[in-house]
Amino acid sequence: MTEAPGLRMFVDGKWVDALNGRTFPDFNPWDDGVVVTVAAGDADDAVEAVDAAARAFPAWSESTPAQRQRVFLTAADLMQRRAGEIRDLLAVETGCGASFAGVQVEFAATLFRQAAALAYAPVGDALASDLPGTHALARRRPVGVVGSITPWNAAVSLSARALAVPIAVGNCVVLKPSEESPWSGGLLFAEILAEAGLPPGVLNVVPHAPGEAGGIADVLVGDPRVRRLNFTGSTVTGRRLAENAGRHLKPLLLQLSGFNPLLVLADADVPAAARSAAYGSFVHQGQVCMCSRRIFVEEQVADAFTEEFVARAERLPVGDPREPGVEIGPLINEWALRLIERRVQEAVDRGATVLAGGRAQGPCYPATVLTDVPADCELALEETFGPVAIVERVPDADAAVERANDSPWALSTGVITGDEGRGLRLARRLTAGMVHVNDSPVNDQPHMPFGGSLDSGWGRFGTGPGRDDFTEVQLVTSRATPRDPFAR
Image 1 (cartoon, one colour):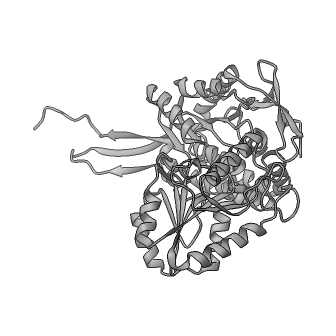
Image 2: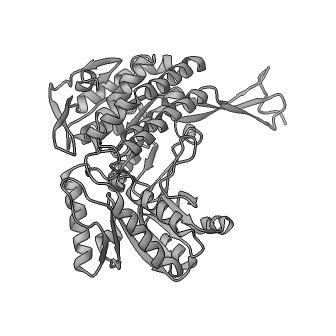
Image 3: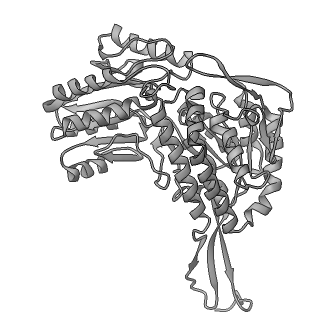
């Protein structure tokens, strides 16, 4: 892995130190070693980044579709050329195993190719007018500077998603990556897009030390030149950002927490359901917002499903994510590990049964399955970002839907059934931004509308719907000669 650019932030096309001169260590969650030392930016650096983006916007907003397309096609090729290096980086920086790391790299490369096509998408509509001689156009145009705040848990795919569409439609971006993934979730993209030919100032990356995100976020929210924000992260933080942005009347795209259900119906293929449940619950050690936390199983197949699901959970290899075949790597940090331990122990103390896992192994927490979890335990009430799934028996599909909808979150849901039509009918009754019939809730493609409702956020990412969030409509009417408004 190249180290030099990772040491500094990226502003106005240049690698620069933080204005305060400070740095912070970026730790490996497996062995607590230092991956790289990174510039520790703050509000002053964020202002510099916004300045650079605002200067770059007039030229980039008028750039040709061909220029934007070349940048993203080249970036996609670079992502794939560096795939092995990026997988290694994700392993040491975020504890991500090779399988999910490969998914992230492929997602980002595909997204960049779709963003390249987005440069040639129609930018408006010709409208009918009741005024004779009046021609009317509703055209979409870039808004200006976009502030993007991204998480660590799927650092490559989620940061690519936060910047690709805004830039492809003519905006400039200031990206604030998580302190847990400043390289794979931020500075990596500065390297790749600069090499791909992106002009200076179009993408700026401001990393920060742990606990110091607030000053940068305040700049992105409060600076009037930042016209849009997008945030992926917890509901608690998203709510604070939304309240602050509301005071500035600033539109905000939020993709927040998910407490996602998986419904296994009596007519399901049980081994297939267990495979979907194991992937959907434990991929990247459960640190994905779409992971299934609650599995509702119809009584008729509950014993068979639970036996198969537990067996699969127990077979998932735990350890160093750099080792081939490891599926469960370390939690992102010790705080996350201790939170899971505490919540599982609380559930057990109050009567829950651990069917698999349930005890930390070094920095890792193995795939864990519980049943009989009291409804008022933290584990049953709050998103627990780790490899823990709750199995609950239900008498029928109606009860499964009712239990699935009994949540303040509404991100992603899976339905496993032998009757696809029945699954589609149930999807209409489920309160979720995304429903996947005969698939796990962990399911995304770059061009599809991604997002939830209720406490899971609002707005949609994706190269289709995302364009609307990062552009604004301007109505333009014209006539060959002035109209007499007094004429009747």
